[in-house]
Amino acid sequence: MTGFRRLAALMMAAFALFTMVTACATRQHSPVPVVPDDPASSFPAKVSLPGGQPVTLLQQPKRIVSLSPSATETLFALGAGDQVIAVDQHSTYPENAPRTELSGFTADAAAVASKNPDLVIAPDNATQLAEGLKVVDVPVLLTPAAASLDDAYQQIQAIGRATGHGNQANAMVQKMRTDIADIVASTPKPPQPMTYFHEVSPDLYTATSQSFVGNVYSLFGMVNIADPAGGPFPQLSQEHVVQANPNLIFAADTKCCGVNAAAIAARPGWHTIDAVQRNQVVELDDDLASRWGPRVVELVRSVSKAVGKAQQG
Image (cartoon, rainbow, N blue to C red; front, side, top):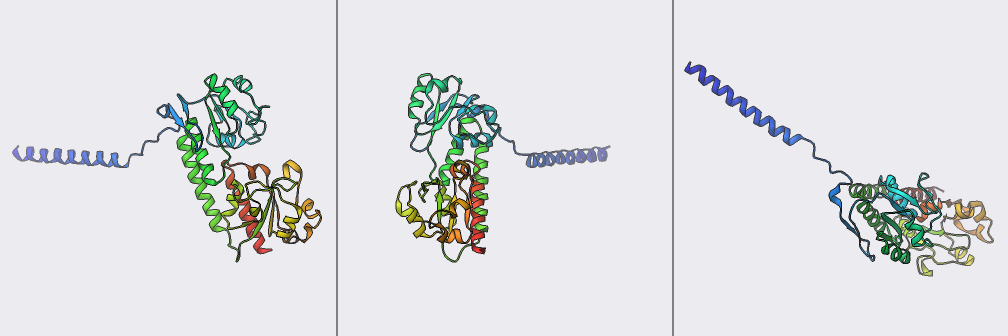
């Protein structure tokens, strides 16, 4: 019996040790808990952007009005579309966004308040609107025009925090950074920097390197022929563009104004421009070229394609 008891004790000890090891292994290999994207613990939240007043949100907003096309695209990309009850007349993407006649430039507080919002996102020049909505306790997040990709990333993350989608916003920004870096790295580098002209409107308003779209072009080491004019959005003369003789022309007024490569080539004197002669006039989507939401990756891809084609031509 003594031997039997000793054997039983050893077997029980071995079983206990096996159980402990198995439990430890189970704990070590169990999946890491995933924090919900809009946890209740995220609120109250104080959200701010550089140069703007912080906005305090006591709980996750369920009735959002967006008066910024860039913000609208960001909201839907983050999965906050179900929280959006109204967007401005210029928010053309996505198609299912609830468009109204509201405008980020002219909307008054009464018109916006009639939508019964619990968060309004508007351009930073809508200060009068913000003051009016403050009276009725509607928080307004004012978003300045982005001048760089970093500005765009900050706004996406701020909108994510304000709507309870902070985790998703951080993941989106990381993916955008990675995708853009990969696109730029895979683009063939020309032997010398290419010059370009970015057309905003047929009367030759343009965007310099100080603008958001100019920051995108700078990723490829391109030289903007409008930079000597100063400011982010100067107006150039016909003579300036013809004499600068850019290697590439990007038309960002195709949807608004019907401009295309043929129309540009038909302008007096423009047939002598290198970009026209070498068929390097790129017709851009106006919206992609003027918004700083998640679709900026598509703009970067379009520029990359144009740079690669220009080196082959």
